[in-house]
Amino acid sequence: MAGEKNKVQFLSGNEACVWAAIHARARFFAGYPISPATEIAEMCAHELPRYGGFYIQMEDEIGSIAAVIGASLGGLRAFTATSGPGLALMQENIGFAAMAEVPCVIINVQRFGPSTGIATKPAQSDVMTTRWGTPGDHSLIVLTPSGGQECYDLTFAAFNLAELFRTPVIVLTDAVIAHLREKVTVKSDEELFLFNEDKQFLRITGLVHDSFGYSSDVPEVAGELIARLAQKIEGYQTLLPGSRFYGPESPEVLIISFGISARAARQAVFLAEQEDLAVSLLELQTLWPFPEEEIRKIGVKAKTVLVAELNRGQVQREVMACGISPEKVRGINKIDTTVITPREILNEILTVIKNN
Amino acid sequence: MVIPDYKKYLAVERLPHIWCAGCGNGVILKALLLVLAELNFRPGEILLATGIGCISRAGDYVSFQRFQGTHGRTLAFVTGLKVARPELKVICLIGDGDCAAIGMGHLIHAARRNLDVAVLVANNLNYGMTGGQFSPLTPNKSLTSTSRAGKNEASLDICRLAEVAGANYVARTSVFYHGELRKYIREAISKTGFSLVEILTSCPTYYGRYNKIGGPGEMLTWFRDKTVPLKKYLQMDKQEQKDFFWRGKLVGRDAPNSYTYGKKNEEPDG
Image 1 (cartoon, each protein chain N blue to C red):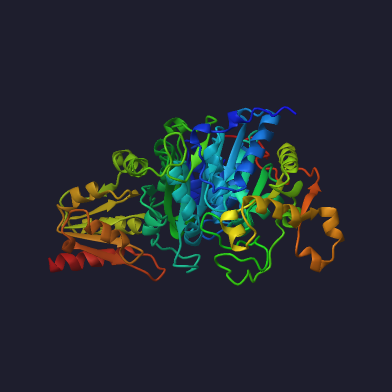
Image 2 (tube, rainbow over the protein chains, first blue to last red; image 1 turned 120 degrees about the horizontal axis):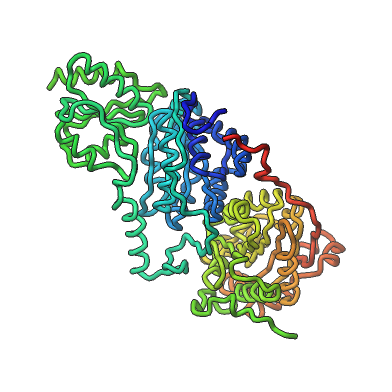
């Protein structure tokens, strides 16, 4: 059957996310229909009750994330799935989950925006929205898969990380990966951490609060809380999924990419290799907190760094701030609903090498 | 009459509270704690869910479980929580802005689902926490900080809305009628399914002052004079009704929950 463990399956990205959630013992989904994430809700409605879980269709995305947070506080592993417009509505409560330290997973299937945009076309333009969409100084975790297998692996990891760090974790996919069918090997549940299933005595608030859960406006309490919420994630980046590296350690051109664009970049690196060009790829799997150290280590050795993404340079600007000379960082960007092709990346590589 | 020991539900060490002198919220909180004591709940069995605004700070003054979410979303949070922990007795204590403005959608849908929660709406007829602006439940023509010439919009009967949305229990009273208040809270908490009690509560600092009602005492007698029993209210003509709030029990029924989450279709084969 579909979703059977330790077997190779033929799954779309959306399906892989759902099986990963079920195998990670997620038993609660609350959502609202939105393209291109709807299949996740449909599958949850069908599959979760078969595993003793619950599907609730809420009145909007604000209610969806709220119900997810409520269920998580009640001891169920809980998640939702949405796309740009829905993510915008969820932001206040994502901040609440960060502040109140409630584990939850949000799968955001990126579509072309802003606003309604084009509901069925891909984009990678929610990079900053996932990081800074909710107001206030905070930290959270964003993972970004580049295919069906990664959808499975990173969604599975997301549930573990949400509980380990007691924070919302966003899995950032896109309209192409969501519907692309690929071979996916599903896991056994030995790699699962379980902390949250006990019935806890709840004293929860989104106000600044002391360690007993009572609100406080004491500067020391506020300062320590905000610092701890950021440090508990940013101080332990090594526990997050690392970037993948393909190619020579000291390349002439280093490509940095993620999601569907990284798939094109992988092929471009393969094509460049065949032409004996020293080209490498760093494929980001954790987008936030930004893997500065990983990028700096490889980036300083490269002559040129190309950042391939379906937006106007949201990751590129972060790369430029990683401690490598900003003038050697350039972008390969597309903002017309089409994806970046391997040939386009290769052409850019050839141009760069010619000009070096 | 023996007064039950309600102080074990009160986080005495957190007092004094932040509410203004003459505010009705303390009356509501005490009525609730008295009911909890009468029904003899253990701290782990009950949870007070609040939103944002004056009344939402009640969670800081209770010793048992509390949840304070974001503005208007209390019932959406609780929808998920009740699925995970159906045995938990959840009491939502929210304001008029929380329930009738920003959170109206969630209120209707929670009532439609007949979610098993007791919702106590502390209606102080304005937004007190932010300095006295009008809310959807502020009566027409009332003076507030955003309606200096009188509120030029209609008000809303949140109780009737809860009735048509599917609530099992709906009642309204004011902090003036303390015995009735406790009775309605007790009935709402004891009811299975969605129950709502609208509690008219005094805000002498803003609503009372702007509308020249007077101090805390005058506000209480204002509620006495402005409320009429439901039966009498229904006999009034439409024009006369505009000057009064009805009080009493509007709905009492035992419809089952309208949801069946998590009914297993079949056992998984994996």
